[in-house]
Amino acid sequence: MQAAMDSRVYGLFKLLFSVAVFSFLAVTGAALQEKHTVPSSSAQINSNSVLVALLDSHYTELSELVEKALLLQTLEEAVSRHNITIFAPKNEALERDLDPEFKRFLLEPGNLRSLQNLILFHIIPTRIESKRWPEESIENHLTLCRDAGEENLVVSKREVSAAKVFRVDDVVRPDGVIHGIERVLIPKSVQQDFNTRRSLRSIAAVLPTGAPEVDPRTHRLKKPANPVPAGAPPALPIYDAMAPGPSIAPAPAPGPGGHHHHFDGESQVKDFIQTLLHYGGYNELADILVNLTSLATEMGRLVSEGYVLTVLAPNDEAMAKLTTDQLSEPGAPEQIMYYHLIPEYQTEESMYNAVRRFGKIRYDTLRLPHKVAAEEADGSVKFGHGEGSAYLFDPDIYTDGRISVQGIDGVLFPPEESKPAAPKAAPVAKVVSKQRRGKLMEVACTMFGTLGFAGCH
Image (tube, rainbow, N blue to C red; front, side, top):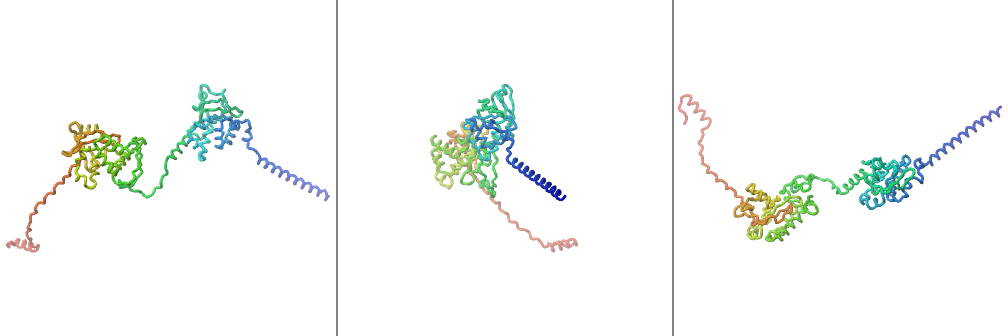
């Protein structure tokens, strides 16, 4: 009896042990099988796939870009779900026809997303063979590029979005087809990214902002200049621009003058001095401008900043009449020249029309606060007053849209400021004040008067 019971217990224990061993082996086998299982998407890719054909085809440039863009797994998943069509640009389109700067942009590590979008823009999840190619109608097909602003490809008459198909059905496989096209298709999003990056490269580094600075010309806090169109007049008056400032002039203002498309004041001043020398009869003025380096430099700086000038140029005969006393005072040559510089652009025609219409005109000069008067005389323009006047003798010697040089036959001087004599003080008459009585005496006299006594004398 006892032996039979022991044999039953032993048999039950053996059965439980066997079940445990089989369960352990089953779990371990399943784990090993799961560990070595190949993804289903990769399992469906075989040697006859269109992706393998693309990597082995003569579209070597495109296949290299696919590998650099790390798109093999993405394309394998797309092939496992769809039958795809690849529009492959020829090698020349990616090697020679593509902008080198754009290609450099695509291959930069930070622009991997743009490169992927460019490649996926050439692939549609629809099979289009030559027999299904639209001959008359236009078909829009959604591409694998889902981030682009332009997601569709337009397929019509052997063209794909204006790119000609030069090899139809170049590679045909069960899971896809490859057509050869003559140029690269660029989605709008990639083009915008490239334009943005190129614009950022052209912007110089921004210096850190420190304490506010005071402009020495205006004695105000410097503020960022508002954008102005090319050729617009400067914001500051020319008199503020003439005030002492930094020794280095600011960058030339953009504009239509000169071959660099900006106002090159230094070259323009040299040009008009050279024109005076070639014209003849204005050598004295040219020598003064050459010797007065500060004046020529300031004129060039003003023109570079966008200001305009009209130079009333006295000829050699007029300059010869200048006396030593007129030139001996400190700063006299500069003051004489400043009175001959008008901060406007005037030609013979504009000045003559003005004096004909308005009679007498007073032009501002750079010698503040003096102005030069102009009026019509003998069919010409006469400047100045009385004996110190000068006529427009050689009109339009030099005109370039910024500097105008008008030859005159005299040196101009501002009229003397006659100070009114101070009025003589009128003689002050001496007034002898009448002595007053004391207050107490006045009260007493008034009381006596009211009582009938004689008044006080």
